[in-house]
Length: 427
Image 1 (cartoon, rainbow, N blue to C red):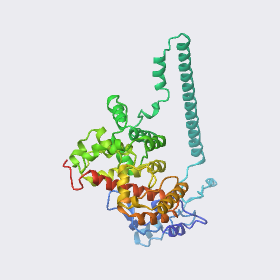
Image 2 (tube, one colour):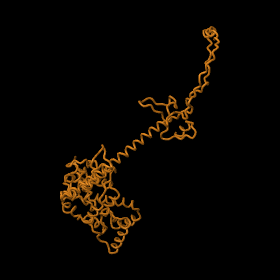
Image 3 (cartoon, rainbow, N blue to C red):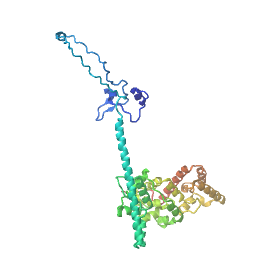
Image 4 (cartoon, rainbow, N blue to C red):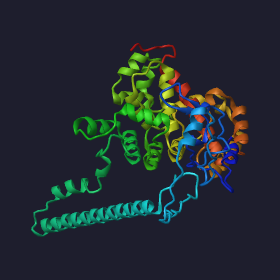
């Protein structure tokens, strides 16, 4: 259709662009659909090849002579024109300006020059404002530095005041102020990361100090849609994986409250919720802390989906941090991992099998940077070893995604060990 239109224009070397236009003179009356409030071209319409061109001078044909009786008498009664001796005045010939294009769609050079001048003036104004803002920032920093020096020289700066000032030295104030009706991407990432690492601190800043932070439900919606990805603190995850005692999260309290109802889960205090569900993602209670604010859950599937959505919303570095929290097969295991591997037959490995498994583990970690993860609760010893050999051929990105899916499978089984699978919560 585009080529048909280009041929119909009949302009040599013409190629239509996204800004090319044709006016209504190039179409027939029946080409328009005028039934609605907006006039539109009908589907499949092609402009006519012959445009309305003004007639050239002298090309008009003389009108036909009327032959009626009255017209004939009128012509005969006219006297002959008098002969004048004054020479006829010939009117000057005014040259006709013929445009070089069919229609004057483009701006004239003068209009373009004016627009360019306005744009350059705008750029210059913005650059001047930028320089002034930088100057103000530099003067403010110098003023604060001088003030601190004066306080120290006059011995007014005590240790308590210095500690209080150091607290606010690196505070990202620009991320805590909302200058428009929407949050910037930097503010969204900051808010999601802050809520991820400390939901209670986040609620305190938002509700008690009235800092303009988005509601936790808004953060969850952003993370579910992939608009934001909280930045995981790798040091925090690694330290939790190495130092925290998993029994602190799934110890006696979890054992007592196996097969809980959803109503109990939704009413748990924050600390108890993290203790009970802190190890459904291996050695990563920070995940439980992050989803705690998303309660109430309608059923166990909604609970599981919230955790999975949170994991999917993480950056690649965050996902790898979760994978690195997992122990090696037959390594230093949590009680849940011990039970799951025992059910898969890893408690009866021969010395040869243990040596082979250790060798495969080291090779896997050297290749991918995190331990081999598989849901042993849904497999057996032979199946796990076979899967390890197969997955060794994966690429890094493919294997990371595969390992995350195994983390979700483990999470699904552990949730069903803690929460009654058929329990529902009535809103």
